[in-house]
Length: 212
Image 1 (cartoon, helix red, strand yellow):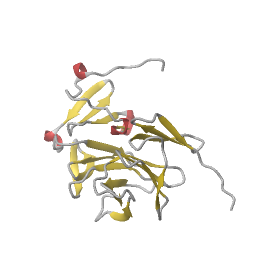
Image 2: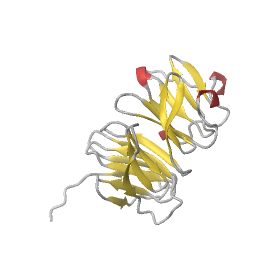
Image 3: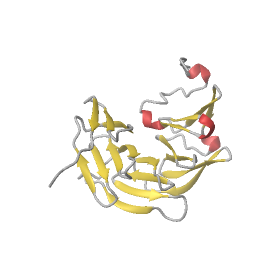
Image 4: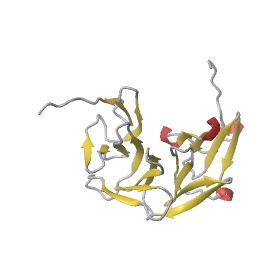
């Protein structure tokens, strides 16, 4: 409380910029902090110590390393078309998808959400993932950048150039924002969704009642 600890390359962080996009950082078990890196590696900060995880622990060192923690505290990763979990000090792939941009996020039902390009899936680590549909982007080159399930169970999906979308369990709709490049998503205690953009500042999406 009242103190800030700064971790740099001198503490063991990657030579690349590990945290350009804040959705690459998640809280793990026992308060540890995990950071997914743009060089395909990951870092864990626990008790003031930085540990780097690379090809020796099952990562590829190619492309982004996305991280998410599920409701049970299990750490998940997505890297080079592979999705899996961190277990016994290793990143263990459980699912291999087509080589598309991947993003993962927590679901309240257990397991994770996966957005692979424009395709939306849900996966609990057993069998095949549940296919839920496509984002109405009108482009096959969709790059997801952020996933957030709100308290009502709706999923918000941010993309690199196609803007923001909301999946209500049945349909997916476009949500207008001040800029189409979405970097981060968060929900506050009033149910507002905060949207960080790459060129339009910070947006707040507020729930409202419509009378028909």
